[in-house]
Image (tube, rainbow, N blue to C red; front, side, top):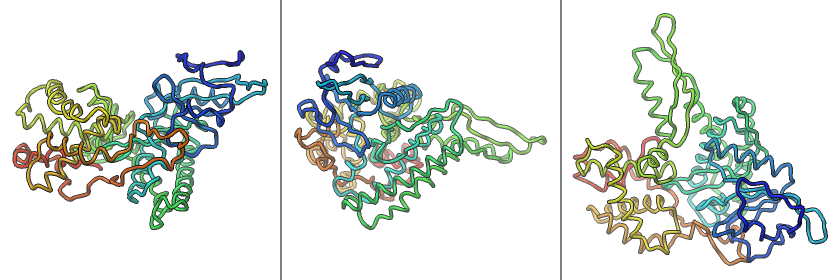
Length: 455
Protein backbone atom coordinates (compact mmCIF):
# COMPACT_ATOMS: atom_id res chain seq x y z
CA UNK A 1 0.00 0.00 0.00
CA UNK A 2 1.41 3.41 -0.97
CA UNK A 3 2.35 5.38 2.15
CA UNK A 4 0.63 8.56 0.89
CA UNK A 5 -2.79 6.93 0.57
CA UNK A 6 -5.53 8.40 2.74
CA UNK A 7 -8.82 6.86 3.84
CA UNK A 8 -11.77 9.04 4.84
CA UNK A 9 -14.45 6.98 6.60
CA UNK A 10 -16.55 6.88 9.75
CA UNK A 11 -15.33 3.35 10.47
CA UNK A 12 -12.53 1.58 8.59
CA UNK A 13 -12.60 -2.10 7.71
CA UNK A 14 -8.96 -3.32 7.90
CA UNK A 15 -9.66 -5.51 4.87
CA UNK A 16 -9.76 -2.33 2.77
CA UNK A 17 -6.00 -2.08 3.15
CA UNK A 18 -5.53 -5.43 1.41
CA UNK A 19 -7.13 -4.33 -1.86
CA UNK A 20 -4.80 -3.48 -4.79
CA UNK A 21 -5.12 0.30 -4.61
CA UNK A 22 -1.81 0.70 -6.49
CA UNK A 23 -3.53 -0.78 -9.59
CA UNK A 24 -6.02 1.11 -11.82
CA UNK A 25 -9.53 -0.16 -11.06
CA UNK A 26 -10.14 -1.49 -14.57
CA UNK A 27 -7.17 -3.85 -14.13
CA UNK A 28 -8.05 -5.30 -10.72
CA UNK A 29 -7.68 -9.10 -10.56
CA UNK A 30 -10.85 -11.16 -10.90
CA UNK A 31 -10.27 -12.95 -7.60
CA UNK A 32 -11.23 -9.81 -5.63
CA UNK A 33 -14.19 -8.90 -7.84
CA UNK A 34 -17.82 -9.89 -7.34
CA UNK A 35 -19.64 -10.88 -10.53
CA UNK A 36 -22.65 -8.59 -10.28
CA UNK A 37 -24.58 -6.86 -13.07
CA UNK A 38 -23.32 -3.31 -13.64
CA UNK A 39 -25.25 -0.40 -15.04
CA UNK A 40 -23.90 2.18 -17.44
CA UNK A 41 -21.51 4.72 -15.91
CA UNK A 42 -19.20 7.46 -17.11
CA UNK A 43 -16.63 6.22 -14.58
CA UNK A 44 -14.98 2.87 -13.97
CA UNK A 45 -17.04 0.95 -11.39
CA UNK A 46 -16.32 -2.49 -9.96
CA UNK A 47 -18.01 -4.65 -7.33
CA UNK A 48 -15.58 -6.11 -4.81
CA UNK A 49 -15.84 -8.88 -2.22
CA UNK A 50 -14.83 -7.52 1.17
CA UNK A 51 -15.22 -9.19 4.58
CA UNK A 52 -18.13 -11.40 3.49
CA UNK A 53 -19.99 -8.47 1.96
CA UNK A 54 -19.90 -6.65 -1.37
CA UNK A 55 -18.85 -3.04 -1.94
CA UNK A 56 -18.96 -0.85 -5.04
CA UNK A 57 -15.77 1.03 -5.94
CA UNK A 58 -15.90 4.00 -8.33
CA UNK A 59 -12.83 5.86 -9.61
CA UNK A 60 -13.32 9.64 -9.73
CA UNK A 61 -11.42 12.83 -8.90
CA UNK A 62 -10.62 13.52 -5.26
CA UNK A 63 -12.78 16.61 -4.75
CA UNK A 64 -15.75 15.01 -6.50
CA UNK A 65 -15.35 11.83 -4.45
CA UNK A 66 -15.37 13.71 -1.15
CA UNK A 67 -18.32 15.83 -2.24
CA UNK A 68 -20.41 12.82 -3.27
CA UNK A 69 -19.44 10.96 -0.09
CA UNK A 70 -20.67 13.88 2.02
CA UNK A 71 -23.89 14.21 0.00
CA UNK A 72 -24.69 10.51 0.36
CA UNK A 73 -24.04 10.65 4.10
CA UNK A 74 -26.42 13.61 4.39
CA UNK A 75 -29.07 11.79 2.36
CA UNK A 76 -28.76 8.67 4.53
CA UNK A 77 -29.12 10.84 7.63
CA UNK A 78 -32.31 12.33 6.14
CA UNK A 79 -33.73 8.89 5.42
CA UNK A 80 -33.51 9.09 1.62
CA UNK A 81 -33.51 5.83 -0.38
CA UNK A 82 -29.90 5.70 -1.55
CA UNK A 83 -26.75 3.62 -1.34
CA UNK A 84 -24.71 3.75 1.88
CA UNK A 85 -21.33 5.53 1.54
CA UNK A 86 -18.41 3.70 3.14
CA UNK A 87 -15.17 5.57 2.45
CA UNK A 88 -13.07 7.70 0.10
CA UNK A 89 -9.59 6.50 -0.84
CA UNK A 90 -7.32 9.32 -2.01
CA UNK A 91 -3.60 9.82 -2.60
CA UNK A 92 -3.34 6.66 -4.70
CA UNK A 93 -0.24 6.05 -6.80
CA UNK A 94 0.86 3.10 -8.88
CA UNK A 95 4.08 1.17 -8.32
CA UNK A 96 6.02 3.69 -10.44
CA UNK A 97 4.69 6.63 -8.44
CA UNK A 98 2.21 7.87 -11.05
CA UNK A 99 -0.90 9.42 -9.58
CA UNK A 100 -4.19 7.47 -9.74
CA UNK A 101 -7.74 8.71 -9.34
CA UNK A 102 -9.41 8.61 -5.94
CA UNK A 103 -12.04 5.96 -5.20
CA UNK A 104 -15.49 6.34 -3.69
CA UNK A 105 -16.68 3.23 -1.87
CA UNK A 106 -20.35 2.45 -1.22
CA UNK A 107 -22.12 -0.62 0.15
CA UNK A 108 -23.72 -2.80 -2.49
CA UNK A 109 -27.51 -2.70 -2.13
CA UNK A 110 -28.47 -6.35 -1.68
CA UNK A 111 -31.22 -7.73 -3.94
CA UNK A 112 -30.99 -4.67 -6.18
CA UNK A 113 -30.54 -4.55 -9.95
CA UNK A 114 -29.73 -1.88 -12.55
CA UNK A 115 -32.46 -1.31 -15.10
CA UNK A 116 -30.50 -3.07 -17.85
CA UNK A 117 -30.28 -6.16 -15.66
CA UNK A 118 -34.05 -6.18 -15.36
CA UNK A 119 -34.39 -6.13 -19.14
CA UNK A 120 -31.57 -8.57 -19.88
CA UNK A 121 -34.14 -11.25 -20.61
CA UNK A 122 -37.51 -10.68 -22.24
CA UNK A 123 -39.92 -9.06 -19.82
CA UNK A 124 -43.41 -7.67 -20.09
CA UNK A 125 -43.67 -4.14 -21.55
CA UNK A 126 -45.47 -3.08 -18.36
CA UNK A 127 -42.17 -3.38 -16.52
CA UNK A 128 -40.94 -0.14 -18.09
CA UNK A 129 -43.86 1.84 -16.69
CA UNK A 130 -43.45 0.24 -13.27
CA UNK A 131 -39.81 1.32 -13.18
CA UNK A 132 -40.89 4.85 -14.10
CA UNK A 133 -43.42 4.88 -11.27
CA UNK A 134 -40.74 3.76 -8.82
CA UNK A 135 -38.33 6.42 -10.07
CA UNK A 136 -41.10 9.03 -9.77
CA UNK A 137 -41.61 8.24 -6.08
CA UNK A 138 -37.85 8.42 -5.50
CA UNK A 139 -37.56 11.78 -7.23
CA UNK A 140 -40.45 13.30 -5.29
CA UNK A 141 -38.97 12.06 -2.01
CA UNK A 142 -35.60 13.59 -2.86
CA UNK A 143 -37.16 16.92 -3.86
CA UNK A 144 -39.15 17.05 -0.63
CA UNK A 145 -35.84 16.70 1.21
CA UNK A 146 -34.41 19.63 -0.77
CA UNK A 147 -32.17 17.50 -2.97
CA UNK A 148 -31.55 18.51 -6.58
CA UNK A 149 -30.29 15.49 -8.53
CA UNK A 150 -29.04 17.11 -11.73
CA UNK A 151 -28.73 13.84 -13.66
CA UNK A 152 -31.93 11.85 -13.16
CA UNK A 153 -31.86 8.62 -15.15
CA UNK A 154 -32.53 4.92 -14.94
CA UNK A 155 -28.76 4.37 -15.12
CA UNK A 156 -28.21 6.30 -11.87
CA UNK A 157 -30.84 4.26 -10.06
CA UNK A 158 -31.02 0.78 -8.56
CA UNK A 159 -34.28 -1.14 -8.27
CA UNK A 160 -35.44 -3.62 -5.68
CA UNK A 161 -38.49 -5.81 -5.99
CA UNK A 162 -41.28 -4.65 -3.70
CA UNK A 163 -44.27 -7.02 -3.54
CA UNK A 164 -44.48 -7.40 -7.31
CA UNK A 165 -43.54 -3.80 -8.02
CA UNK A 166 -40.21 -1.99 -7.61
CA UNK A 167 -38.62 0.39 -5.12
CA UNK A 168 -36.00 2.81 -6.50
CA UNK A 169 -32.74 3.93 -4.86
CA UNK A 170 -30.36 6.72 -5.80
CA UNK A 171 -26.93 5.33 -6.62
CA UNK A 172 -25.08 8.32 -8.10
CA UNK A 173 -25.17 11.74 -6.41
CA UNK A 174 -22.18 13.20 -8.25
CA UNK A 175 -24.15 16.11 -9.77
CA UNK A 176 -26.49 16.58 -6.80
CA UNK A 177 -27.06 19.53 -4.50
CA UNK A 178 -28.72 19.57 -1.08
CA UNK A 179 -30.70 22.69 -0.22
CA UNK A 180 -31.80 22.68 3.45
CA UNK A 181 -34.26 25.51 2.81
CA UNK A 182 -35.97 23.64 0.00
CA UNK A 183 -35.47 23.14 -3.71
CA UNK A 184 -36.61 25.86 -6.13
CA UNK A 185 -39.34 25.22 -8.67
CA UNK A 186 -36.85 25.85 -11.46
CA UNK A 187 -34.52 23.10 -10.25
CA UNK A 188 -37.45 20.71 -9.75
CA UNK A 189 -38.71 21.24 -13.29
CA UNK A 190 -35.20 20.96 -14.71
CA UNK A 191 -34.76 17.61 -12.94
CA UNK A 192 -38.01 16.40 -14.48
CA UNK A 193 -36.99 17.57 -17.96
CA UNK A 194 -33.62 15.80 -17.65
CA UNK A 195 -35.36 12.67 -16.39
CA UNK A 196 -37.70 12.58 -19.38
CA UNK A 197 -34.88 13.08 -21.89
CA UNK A 198 -32.60 10.49 -20.29
CA UNK A 199 -35.33 7.88 -19.89
CA UNK A 200 -36.42 8.13 -23.52
CA UNK A 201 -32.80 7.72 -24.64
CA UNK A 202 -32.22 4.76 -22.33
CA UNK A 203 -35.36 2.96 -23.48
CA UNK A 204 -34.47 3.58 -27.14
CA UNK A 205 -31.10 2.04 -26.38
CA UNK A 206 -32.85 -1.01 -24.94
CA UNK A 207 -34.94 -1.31 -28.09
CA UNK A 208 -31.84 -1.06 -30.25
CA UNK A 209 -30.34 -3.94 -28.26
CA UNK A 210 -33.55 -6.01 -28.61
CA UNK A 211 -34.10 -5.89 -24.83
CA UNK A 212 -37.40 -4.00 -25.12
CA UNK A 213 -40.27 -4.71 -27.47
CA UNK A 214 -40.33 -2.45 -30.55
CA UNK A 215 -44.03 -1.83 -29.89
CA UNK A 216 -43.27 0.07 -26.67
CA UNK A 217 -43.75 3.82 -27.16
CA UNK A 218 -40.61 5.17 -25.53
CA UNK A 219 -41.81 8.78 -25.83
CA UNK A 220 -45.03 7.94 -23.99
CA UNK A 221 -43.10 6.14 -21.24
CA UNK A 222 -40.78 9.13 -20.90
CA UNK A 223 -43.77 11.47 -20.72
CA UNK A 224 -45.21 9.29 -17.96
CA UNK A 225 -42.66 10.45 -15.41
CA UNK A 226 -43.74 14.07 -16.00
CA UNK A 227 -47.42 13.25 -15.49
CA UNK A 228 -46.88 10.93 -12.53
CA UNK A 229 -44.48 13.33 -10.84
CA UNK A 230 -46.93 16.25 -11.17
CA UNK A 231 -49.75 14.12 -9.79
CA UNK A 232 -47.78 12.97 -6.75
CA UNK A 233 -46.16 16.35 -6.08
CA UNK A 234 -49.54 18.12 -6.16
CA UNK A 235 -51.09 15.53 -3.88
CA UNK A 236 -48.30 16.03 -1.38
CA UNK A 237 -47.91 19.80 -1.50
CA UNK A 238 -50.84 21.54 -3.22
CA UNK A 239 -53.26 23.66 -1.25
CA UNK A 240 -56.89 22.54 -1.41
CA UNK A 241 -59.93 24.70 -0.61
CA UNK A 242 -63.39 23.45 0.28
CA UNK A 243 -66.50 24.28 2.22
CA UNK A 244 -66.57 23.80 5.97
CA UNK A 245 -69.41 21.34 5.33
CA UNK A 246 -66.94 19.12 3.42
CA UNK A 247 -64.55 18.33 6.23
CA UNK A 248 -64.51 14.71 5.11
CA UNK A 249 -62.14 15.90 2.39
CA UNK A 250 -59.43 16.43 5.02
CA UNK A 251 -59.53 12.75 5.92
CA UNK A 252 -59.81 11.81 2.25
CA UNK A 253 -56.64 13.73 1.45
CA UNK A 254 -54.75 12.06 4.29
CA UNK A 255 -55.95 8.59 3.23
CA UNK A 256 -54.85 9.20 -0.36
CA UNK A 257 -51.40 10.13 0.92
CA UNK A 258 -51.26 7.07 3.17
CA UNK A 259 -52.25 4.84 0.26
CA UNK A 260 -49.25 6.14 -1.66
CA UNK A 261 -46.99 5.36 1.30
CA UNK A 262 -46.77 8.80 2.92
CA UNK A 263 -47.44 9.98 6.44
CA UNK A 264 -48.77 13.45 7.13
CA UNK A 265 -46.78 14.82 10.01
CA UNK A 266 -48.35 18.29 10.01
CA UNK A 267 -51.23 20.05 8.28
CA UNK A 268 -51.88 23.76 7.87
CA UNK A 269 -55.57 24.68 7.83
CA UNK A 270 -57.06 28.17 7.44
CA UNK A 271 -60.59 29.57 7.13
CA UNK A 272 -61.84 32.71 5.43
CA UNK A 273 -63.23 35.71 7.29
CA UNK A 274 -66.72 34.24 7.42
CA UNK A 275 -65.49 30.84 8.47
CA UNK A 276 -67.24 29.30 5.46
CA UNK A 277 -64.33 27.95 3.47
CA UNK A 278 -61.27 26.05 4.63
CA UNK A 279 -57.97 25.30 2.94
CA UNK A 280 -55.60 22.45 3.67
CA UNK A 281 -51.96 22.06 2.78
CA UNK A 282 -49.62 19.30 4.02
CA UNK A 283 -46.59 20.91 5.63
CA UNK A 284 -44.40 17.95 6.47
CA UNK A 285 -44.85 14.62 4.74
CA UNK A 286 -42.66 11.57 4.72
CA UNK A 287 -42.65 8.25 2.91
CA UNK A 288 -42.54 4.88 4.58
CA UNK A 289 -45.96 4.69 6.25
CA UNK A 290 -46.27 0.90 5.98
CA UNK A 291 -42.57 0.24 6.38
CA UNK A 292 -42.53 2.00 9.74
CA UNK A 293 -45.68 0.26 10.93
CA UNK A 294 -44.22 -3.17 10.19
CA UNK A 295 -40.92 -2.18 11.78
CA UNK A 296 -42.70 -0.96 14.92
CA UNK A 297 -44.95 -4.00 15.23
CA UNK A 298 -42.63 -6.81 14.18
CA UNK A 299 -39.09 -5.47 13.91
CA UNK A 300 -38.96 -6.55 10.24
CA UNK A 301 -37.22 -4.16 7.84
CA UNK A 302 -39.24 -4.42 4.62
CA UNK A 303 -40.07 -2.40 1.52
CA UNK A 304 -43.17 -0.21 1.42
CA UNK A 305 -45.52 -2.41 -0.62
CA UNK A 306 -44.25 -5.52 1.12
CA UNK A 307 -45.19 -3.83 4.38
CA UNK A 308 -48.62 -3.01 2.98
CA UNK A 309 -49.21 -6.64 2.04
CA UNK A 310 -47.97 -7.90 5.42
CA UNK A 311 -50.18 -5.51 7.36
CA UNK A 312 -53.21 -6.63 5.37
CA UNK A 313 -52.37 -10.25 6.10
CA UNK A 314 -51.92 -9.34 9.75
CA UNK A 315 -55.41 -7.78 9.80
CA UNK A 316 -56.85 -10.91 8.19
CA UNK A 317 -55.14 -13.05 10.84
CA UNK A 318 -56.51 -10.74 13.53
CA UNK A 319 -60.04 -11.15 12.18
CA UNK A 320 -60.05 -14.93 11.73
CA UNK A 321 -58.58 -15.46 15.21
CA UNK A 322 -61.26 -13.27 16.75
CA UNK A 323 -58.73 -10.81 18.17
CA UNK A 324 -60.22 -7.55 16.87
CA UNK A 325 -60.30 -6.12 20.39
CA UNK A 326 -56.76 -7.18 21.32
CA UNK A 327 -53.89 -4.67 21.12
CA UNK A 328 -52.38 -4.78 17.64
CA UNK A 329 -48.90 -5.19 19.15
CA UNK A 330 -49.89 -8.51 20.75
CA UNK A 331 -51.58 -9.72 17.59
CA UNK A 332 -48.53 -8.80 15.51
CA UNK A 333 -46.30 -10.83 17.81
CA UNK A 334 -48.59 -13.84 17.42
CA UNK A 335 -48.81 -13.40 13.62
CA UNK A 336 -45.03 -13.27 13.40
CA UNK A 337 -44.72 -16.53 15.37
CA UNK A 338 -47.67 -18.35 13.78
CA UNK A 339 -47.55 -17.20 10.15
CA UNK A 340 -44.50 -15.32 8.91
CA UNK A 341 -41.64 -17.13 10.64
CA UNK A 342 -42.96 -20.68 9.99
CA UNK A 343 -43.48 -19.80 6.33
CA UNK A 344 -39.92 -18.54 5.85
CA UNK A 345 -38.43 -21.39 7.91
CA UNK A 346 -40.20 -23.88 5.63
CA UNK A 347 -38.08 -22.61 2.73
CA UNK A 348 -34.81 -24.58 2.45
CA UNK A 349 -31.82 -22.56 3.56
CA UNK A 350 -30.10 -22.79 0.17
CA UNK A 351 -33.13 -21.18 -1.52
CA UNK A 352 -33.73 -18.31 0.93
CA UNK A 353 -30.97 -16.15 -0.56
CA UNK A 354 -32.73 -15.98 -3.91
CA UNK A 355 -35.14 -13.26 -2.69
CA UNK A 356 -35.64 -11.16 0.40
CA UNK A 357 -37.74 -12.97 3.05
CA UNK A 358 -40.53 -10.39 2.73
CA UNK A 359 -40.60 -10.87 -1.06
CA UNK A 360 -40.68 -14.65 -0.65
CA UNK A 361 -43.62 -14.25 1.73
CA UNK A 362 -45.42 -12.00 -0.77
CA UNK A 363 -44.86 -14.49 -3.60
CA UNK A 364 -46.14 -17.38 -1.48
CA UNK A 365 -49.33 -15.41 -0.81
CA UNK A 366 -49.71 -14.82 -4.55
CA UNK A 367 -48.98 -18.49 -5.28
CA UNK A 368 -51.56 -19.55 -2.72
CA UNK A 369 -54.16 -17.43 -4.47
CA UNK A 370 -53.37 -19.01 -7.83
CA UNK A 371 -53.57 -22.51 -6.36
CA UNK A 372 -56.86 -21.69 -4.69
CA UNK A 373 -58.29 -20.40 -7.97
CA UNK A 374 -57.08 -23.49 -9.80
CA UNK A 375 -58.51 -25.93 -7.26
CA UNK A 376 -61.66 -23.88 -6.64
CA UNK A 377 -61.07 -24.21 -2.93
CA UNK A 378 -58.95 -22.94 -0.08
CA UNK A 379 -55.29 -23.98 0.07
CA UNK A 380 -53.41 -23.95 3.35
CA UNK A 381 -50.32 -21.79 3.80
CA UNK A 382 -48.28 -24.94 4.37
CA UNK A 383 -49.38 -26.55 1.09
CA UNK A 384 -48.85 -23.31 -0.83
CA UNK A 385 -45.36 -22.92 0.62
CA UNK A 386 -44.39 -26.48 -0.26
CA UNK A 387 -45.63 -26.12 -3.84
CA UNK A 388 -43.97 -22.71 -4.24
CA UNK A 389 -40.64 -24.09 -3.00
CA UNK A 390 -40.90 -27.05 -5.38
CA UNK A 391 -42.10 -25.28 -8.53
CA UNK A 392 -41.46 -21.52 -8.40
CA UNK A 393 -38.57 -20.47 -6.20
CA UNK A 394 -35.95 -22.72 -7.83
CA UNK A 395 -36.56 -20.86 -11.11
CA UNK A 396 -35.46 -17.54 -9.58
CA UNK A 397 -31.88 -16.41 -9.97
CA UNK A 398 -30.03 -15.52 -6.77
CA UNK A 399 -30.97 -11.83 -6.36
CA UNK A 400 -28.98 -11.36 -3.19
CA UNK A 401 -25.70 -11.47 -5.07
CA UNK A 402 -26.27 -12.71 -8.66
CA UNK A 403 -22.94 -14.49 -8.47
CA UNK A 404 -21.54 -15.84 -11.70
CA UNK A 405 -18.15 -16.96 -12.96
CA UNK A 406 -15.40 -14.36 -12.39
CA UNK A 407 -15.14 -13.55 -16.09
CA UNK A 408 -18.92 -13.07 -16.52
CA UNK A 409 -19.53 -9.68 -14.97
CA UNK A 410 -21.58 -7.92 -17.59
CA UNK A 411 -25.31 -7.41 -17.67
CA UNK A 412 -25.90 -10.24 -20.09
CA UNK A 413 -25.15 -12.75 -17.32
CA UNK A 414 -28.38 -11.87 -15.51
CA UNK A 415 -31.55 -13.85 -16.03
CA UNK A 416 -34.82 -12.55 -14.64
CA UNK A 417 -38.05 -14.56 -14.63
CA UNK A 418 -40.66 -13.37 -17.08
CA UNK A 419 -43.43 -13.30 -14.50
CA UNK A 420 -42.97 -9.67 -13.55
CA UNK A 421 -46.42 -8.11 -13.56
CA UNK A 422 -48.89 -8.53 -10.72
CA UNK A 423 -52.06 -10.45 -11.54
CA UNK A 424 -54.65 -8.07 -12.90
CA UNK A 425 -57.74 -10.22 -12.32
CA UNK A 426 -60.91 -8.38 -11.46
CA UNK A 427 -61.21 -10.47 -8.29
CA UNK A 428 -58.36 -8.43 -6.82
CA UNK A 429 -60.35 -5.20 -6.82
CA UNK A 430 -61.35 -3.81 -3.42
CA UNK A 431 -60.87 -7.06 -1.48
CA UNK A 432 -59.43 -5.07 1.38
CA UNK A 433 -63.00 -3.94 2.20
CA UNK A 434 -64.29 -7.43 2.84
CA UNK A 435 -65.72 -8.28 6.22
CA UNK A 436 -65.00 -11.14 8.55
CA UNK A 437 -67.96 -13.00 7.03
CA UNK A 438 -66.37 -12.72 3.60
CA UNK A 439 -63.13 -14.00 5.04
CA UNK A 440 -64.79 -17.05 6.56
CA UNK A 441 -66.48 -17.79 3.24
CA UNK A 442 -63.26 -17.40 1.26
CA UNK A 443 -60.23 -17.15 3.57
CA UNK A 444 -57.69 -17.11 0.79
CA UNK A 445 -59.30 -14.34 -1.19
CA UNK A 446 -59.22 -12.11 1.86
CA UNK A 447 -55.50 -12.60 2.52
CA UNK A 448 -53.28 -13.45 -0.41
CA UNK A 449 -55.74 -12.20 -3.01
CA UNK A 450 -55.93 -8.72 -1.54
CA UNK A 451 -55.76 -5.84 -3.98
CA UNK A 452 -54.42 -2.67 -2.36
CA UNK A 453 -56.14 0.65 -2.78
CA UNK A 454 -54.20 3.25 -4.67
CA UNK A 455 -52.17 0.85 -6.78
